[in-house]
Amino acid sequence: MTVPLDYDAPNGRTIQIAVSRVSAKSRTHKRGILLSNPGGPGGAGLAHTLELRPALKDVAQRYDLIGFDPRFLGESTPITCAPATSTRAPGKTTSPRADFEASVRDARDLARRCGEHKDNAELLPHASSRNVARDMDVIRAALGERKLSYYGVSYGADLGAVYTQMFPDRADRMVIDSSTDPEASQYELFQRAGEPLEDALDEWAGWVARRHDEYRLGRSGKRVRAAVQKMLDRAEWRPISAGDTRLTAPVIRLLLRQFIQQKENDAALAGLVRDLVTAAADKPVKPGPVLAGLLQLLKSPDLADSMVGGALFMCGDGGWPAGGWPDDPETYWRETVRSRATQPVFGPFVNGMIAPCAFWQAERREPGTTVGNAVPVLMLQARRDNNVPYAGALALHRKLTGSRLVTANIRAHGVYGRGVSGHRPVRCADRAVNDYLRSGNLPGQDVTCPS
Image 1 (cartoon, rainbow, N blue to C red):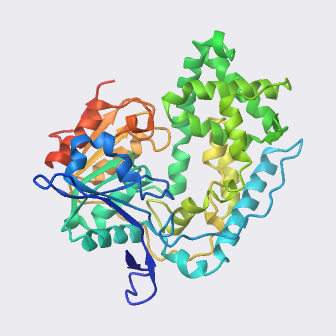
Image 2: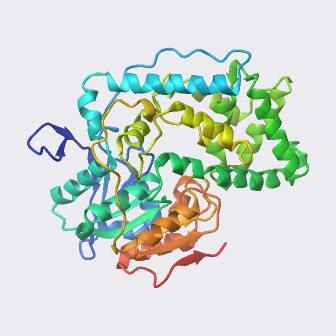
């Protein structure tokens, strides 16, 4: 599909948006089109709606299932950056400040490689969530539909909320899963994850302590946490050797952050921490399957560019849902230092130089999206989500006055269709979504699913 690069200049340069369709099987009960977005930001979504089919069950037969890669991602006029220069492996010693300065150098380098490569200087100013929403509306029009239905998770949830504000009369049955506070910047949203992440670590530590005979990390949650902290304290000054790779504290925090999101990862995280604690004590360790897989990933030549897709929108938006980053690197350092008192494990990560936006070379063309109307929306949120905290969803819920909220008391990021990815499904939430997509009727009031 062809869309304008710049919607203010519709007769100017165009770009291509890759779209997929699985036609509805039921002609008698066909409702329309169902689009989706898997989040990120930076996630390609050409196959995402199709992947939801097992969760949608009979509802999938009532819609044309539409997948698309957002502009500049996947097959949609992709933006690429110049190859990363070879990065220097960590030395035998380091410090928190040295690790921070290395992250600043990496961020500056990524911004330069993206801003100066090919014709990116012309493309980058048009990488924004509002433009993706406009592209979605062109998909709707190109398929001859008066309205579109939608499911989005994480950043995809916020993108769905943006669409309801920009095109309220064209929003049909909208489902947004795991969303954020529309009054916060992206950096503030990362910062707010610090406390829930520490709470999640407490929960995980208690689980591990009850399995001390298996993991040998401590017979109480307090001792398990102490083992994690001791390992991190060591890595902040002497990177931990695992196989032929040295792991710095920022890398270890990133790994912990990825696994702690889902309760189903508790055993994998315990095995990973067990290996790292052993290695931090300078004892020989044969990496288990989790650590071995991660070490292989860290050696991937593509890893350095894995931030590009997310950076396009995190740095391209002028405000919520993805923009709003401080320009002064020292702001990140001060926040990192401040956070250590109450968030010793995850504070330095969520307050650090996460994205290259302080050095981004593209001008932000629009402000963020202001939320506030009564478009009907079904919202879902995990109460113990440590990626996008529950309080943020409540804030968006208050702004979307026509919304209903389904709450699941689980530690997870993403509530609907969890069984598709091998996680334990929340059947109450799955039913609520499918009932809404099937009938168009929101629940009469907010719903809390049984534990």
